[in-house]
Length: 460
Image (cartoon, rainbow, N blue to C red; front, side):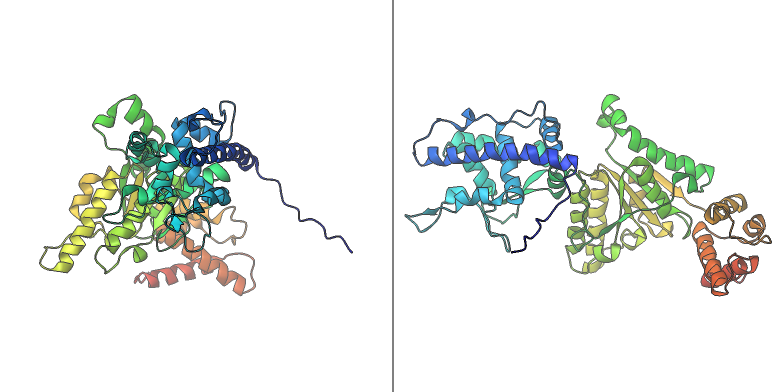
């Protein structure tokens, strides 16, 4: 027989390798605790009398991201067990198969084990009840104490790491699924930051740009206002914590960008993310707004809930589509629209990160927004000097320009926004190459300008 070569895999990146090593030890400890809990609960012979006798792995010299998170959060014995229980279906699902054992008296699973089954996953999915059994057995006082793990004040909830999911009216709290956040799961396994995919549940796309901060052309007054936003991002912890101003200042920063199309509002939001090393997510309002009562609020909640504990900038473009002026409540539709606006105002005000709204028509926005915003920045059409800077930076080395192109004259004669200038250059480049030329002529660019003016309804 001809031997088949064994498949080869690239070695794991160091963060993932370190996490895997730590999780291997943690899962071995968890397995011992689970075996011990089952043995003690059913009165089987057991070497120890209490699961607390089984010490968790020592992480003091462990530099994996997983270990650093455990130490940063200050998680103790029971919290580490709960966290591993929630991680188990994702990294070693078979370890929970023990919970499939049947109660012979009733020909069904044990109620105290909790757990649910998934649509595709064939393994056991733990619930809060599973955690309570593992941690407390049939000790009622300890079970009640452990309810604190799922309180709003616990780091699990406060940092959006772990929660009980799937509320059903009238059913016990601990019957809900034990759900770990995708962000935390990604961080303590692959070592990478989780970036959600665009979907109905998350109608937002990550904004990126290849441009740099130096490519941004803004008037001095606008640049100064934008510096205040980046200043807040860099210094908010010192302002709130070290200086103690959290007593009087709400967390987060809310800014409104308004002005004509093409004046740099979206690019500025993108570059704020770049310079501050934050992801910027542009909210798709077409998927956000629903004619069905309650759906818009639900869609908004999905975005804000996922962003709550992430280092993100939320960017609402064409914001007047959702945040328009509230109407007199003369009909059910008016009342519904006003409820959506009020809900959004509250979520924006409570969001601890940076929210930027952009609109071409500030007058259409509800007045209540302005009281809640730290900045309302007007992006004007650039003046001749700024237009020349945009032309020159967009054209780069200008080696592909005819000698007859006078950039200064173009900037002086034609009042265009930055976005329009980029469109003119694109048109001119296509025109030149279609005609078999390797350089842009003044005629190519002027033809592009005329096309741009026609688009905007101008004549010259």
